[in-house]
Amino acid sequence: MSDSDVGIRGASGAPAWTPDDDDDRDHRAGGGAGSAVSSGAARALPRTPLGDRIAHRLADRCDAFGNPEHDYDACVVDWNARGVGALPARTQLRLREAGDEDEVDMHDVQQRGVGDCAFMAPLAAAAATPAGRKAIHEGIREIKSDAGDVVAYAVRLYEPHWNNGAPKTFRERWIPVSAHEPYVVGHAEARVEKANAGQREEEARAETWPLVMEQAFAKLRGGYNAIGKNGRVQDAMEILTGKEVHHVDTEEVGARTIADALRGGDLVVLSTKPVTGNAHGLVGGHAYVVTGRTVGPDGEALLELHNPWNRRQPARVPESELARWFTCVDIGSVRGMP
Image 1 (spheres, rainbow, N blue to C red):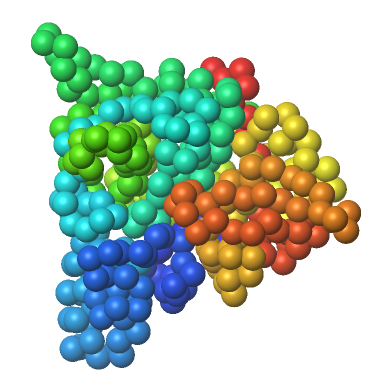
Image 2: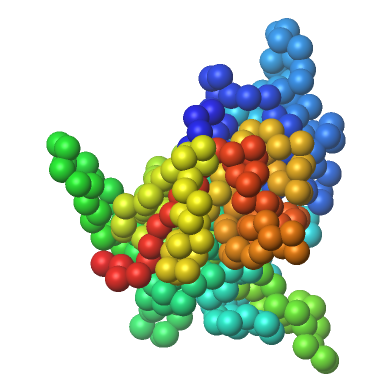
């Protein structure tokens, strides 16, 4: 795994799966980490003909997310965190919930089984800034039938082009996403509003804009297998913003780099090393949004991070420990987007 790679799940040379790996393995239907049907169990089998056959069978399970042979694109039965099932019947593209600053909010992004934190972390980072929220609002268009029903969405992303040593350029692409197309198992979870007084739980609405964005990104990149097994934050952030991203190894991060980026309203994402030992609550091989920088009682700078799972949030991390737990930082801008 290179310093800038996040969530690599390649079949050749892939590191052994651990519970600290990138994708969310809290599978409430019995396929969680350490269970008999988990990808970890499949990878731990001895390399024998029988073991290989069993590993292949487990890879065919639609919750074998960490198995390098798992086919995300073949598993199109819908899923949610409460078990196997479809999305709630009442869905809405954007929804302002209590405590949200806008209909588009960082907490709407909830990565699950697909190992695409390289995209979901920059998406959450964008949803945490005024310019990013505006870009997301403008970057999803509803396509309606003659009867006024939403039948599809068009999502704006940016395709990078390299020009023989000249600066990289980006071409605006509007990616079509059907409103009736099924999502793959393990897709981002729709955030469900809290039921109001007198409202039945099944009447609560689910917010789907992150799922639509994720599906558009998968289509642009060639499928969920492409984004769930191999991804770099730098690439995903550039596709999202249409601007070149400043990628820096943590060994080379200047004293004011992150502070200046946050002050300027930039997107800042840190990528953890493959193994963190759960220090500060950090998951290995994962991407985190940097949401703030504070100074502790002892005068040490502390970084506030957000997990794109929208749960299992880490503690504040001393900036002096950047190179110990993180490989790189990616800084991008949505200001003045094309």
